[in-house]
Image (tube, rainbow, N blue to C red; front, side):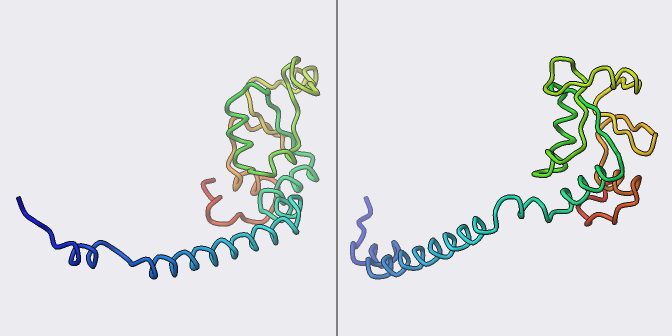
Length: 152
């Protein structure tokens, strides 16, 4: 059995109590800075955070152009489309097609010939399935999206 010199072990095992307290004060500074950042973010308000994003600007533009997304509350693909818009998903011009959904407009969906969800109506044309933000922007003449949105 090998014996270990405890003095040598303490030197190799890590920082001393004095060094650890210095690390703690560094952590405290980081927590204080993080707290200040959080407080300054709260001062802006949630509406301003979501309002200035590309997704929010595109949603507002789609609404101003009369575009509509037809969907059903239970459809997983509609949820995927909403995730692309992040916090601005509630700003998408949306038509609920399931008669049991909140604010349902099932007759409008039937009259428009909606067969699958989501379906986008843009300037009288229909586009079935989840649409990338870049394509929605291009179809409505909106500014080109940042690179992370250019999947088409």
